[in-house]
Image (cartoon, rainbow, N blue to C red; front, side, top):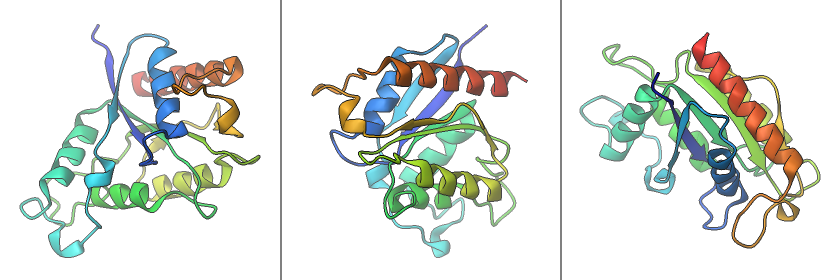
Length: 187
């Protein structure tokens, strides 16, 4: 059996993002059977523009993201929290891939299995951002993993200077989240 393709997206653009570090940790604690590819072009996606949201007019970077999501068996998203919600760049990308106004190409997020996790320096971590993201995925009819919740609060304490995850409990939760995503894909 071939491995399942997981497209991993960090909602943070920072070079030393704890959320990107969390995705790298997911690659390391992979329970097996998953190829986890980290998407690294979020910063290049232009602001959503309904006038350009047709198959022939979408920017190439958007067409590429839509294709990659369509081809992936599942998504793994790590989100920071900004103003009690998800970062605008992440929401913008979701807006570009959540439509099919021409009814000709399908909806990349429709029924797509998705696992959500997040890291933030606060005591609440990314709790509110993850709730906001779950609400967005209700609209897209995506199939979101409910448990376990991976909320890396006080994230500065969980990674070393090179971005390695130091916290075994968080590593175990990430591995369990990947197992739940895999099970959701296979059922």
